[in-house]
Image (tube, rainbow, N blue to C red; front, side, top):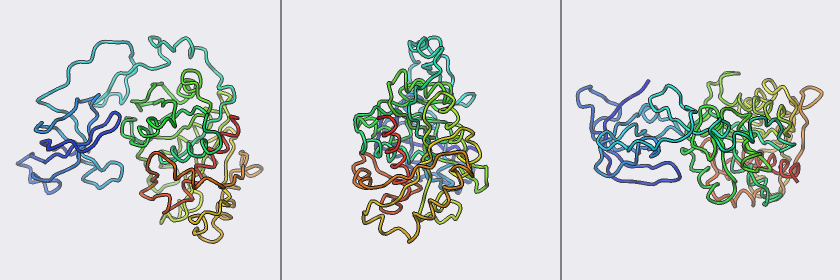
Length: 381
């Protein structure tokens, strides 16, 4: 379902690498009796200039507003589909024939690092080995910054790359966190794979994305997670994070060291996500067929926010994670201290938020990701 609206740009509100937010007034349609976002409503509208050009004050814009009308969290923008009175000039012809967001109205053509026209094609053509590179796999995009914080707390000189899968946002430009982490030097680069696009490098799938991270970006550690906008349906299998298990398989197949970051929460109101989320238990326990290091936080850092966790929460997380470890499961459980990680998380150059909760709201979520980064850094060292 698409809900269309005409709009008039009032002003530019903000922007980051690859994205611009404007304030727009709904101006139409005038004759459909719409009671959702009617004429005169002001909305925040998100634009990707590389796709549709950059709107200016006074521009007429065509908007898609369905996710905004439904009140979805990460989809809470109107989306600029076109600036019809001032279309961008045709891009200069160049190499590249990877089409992403394929057969949608905004499909875009990019140069893949692994395709024949790329300068990296010869490096990747027969590539088949990550040479033991640690690969941290996480369910949510919000784990990226805390994983990197954990890596840097252990060894700040390691080069880290992010492989963004297509389970959430397709344009990497949507992520303000990714832009901020790149600007702060916490990432050597990003690779967008599958239908995702907009990274420093493009690749066909997770396998070539990981190889590009290692052989082109020179990464010591890679982090694999979907873009913002995790999808879940409250069913055992109906969530986009099943790709976490597939990423474990890819890393192992390419002779990397897969490291599983647990999705953990002490305060999520949904029982299935409290303690270790069923997303982690299903993706790592059922989808991942290769063994990985599953890093289990001990919550022994002594920080004030850890002390405020529910009594026995650490034991609950350990007990739930045991189902993933041998002999019941196929993975290796790695118990990891959270000592020193709260200060490391507080040094993040980007805002820490997961499911609308901050570090102070739900420290367990961020510490569980950070310990996976700490373990990966030790493997890389």
